[in-house]
Image (cartoon, rainbow, N blue to C red; front, side):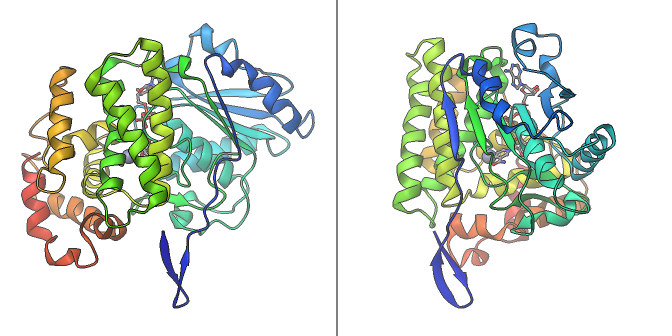
Length: 368
Ligand code: NAD
Ligand code: ZN
């Protein structure tokens, strides 16, 4: 992807996750993987774990705790906030004599993003809200490991951690954000509720549609995006796979979808979904689905296939989300969405402002 720097066109030199394990049961290797990273007996590993696993011994009994290691159970009911990251960092600092050896996130996009953000904020001063943006982080994060338990967001592979702050919903995008280690164990996704499986899976599908139909597309993004798109069709359209194959393939689709957008950008659905999430707290997966359902004019083929998949899996999306909103509230959402310029430029082109304006976005939001 081309970026303009000091008047010269250069290509983005972006970091990738340096180590990844894939396989059913690979979660059992966690101890062997992290042990060499322990600094000393005073410097613990902190496990940030989705609280949906509280009391689920099949998973929690396999978390290797020693010395002063601890598990912090975190709810994924709301998306990560900068205030939540700051509070977690404070708690970790106050409860430990030394800086931790590492942060291990076990959960979906919500927990993975929190793990990335906490690991960054343990070495960077101030509030996480100061770092929302691009390349504002100064110091490398502490060692951090991502272990997804639901597939689709690509958060396990991306260079960002999406946070809602006092002023904006925006990621901490930096070269230090990606995980040092990822463990892809599809077995961990076995109990994901059906509707959530669809919503988060569709996040991956929408990443592919937005990347493959964007003006930023290049051979790098295309190769990953096409693979992820094919996998999504195998899983959600053809539906001939066993449960295990479905889990394995969706985990890889998420990875490839994330890789595809790493070197391009998302588009209209994500821009509008960020607005919904900022004002109404609508979660990413379902928010993307609600928005995407109304985007025929931008992505005719992608939306037609989405509607087929929705019907096939008996998914009914909420309606009337925006029906009681005031003019001011619409303005807030529209401003958040319009502010995401690279997404619009990718979706529509450099002259996107000719067609995308306040009225246009209002008419779209009014349908939702
Ligand atoms: P999530 O982490 O919010 O989890 C969704 C629900 O599934 C929660 O109720 C959770 O408890 C449950 N769940 C997770 N794993 C489960 C399991 N194995 N069994 C049973 N229940 C389980 O969902 P998500 O869609 O993965 O993540 C959304 C978040 O990801 C948003 O905050 C979004 O901003 C972020 N995101 C980040 C990136 C990135 O690149 N950093 C990309 C896309 C989305
Ligand atoms: Zn997404």
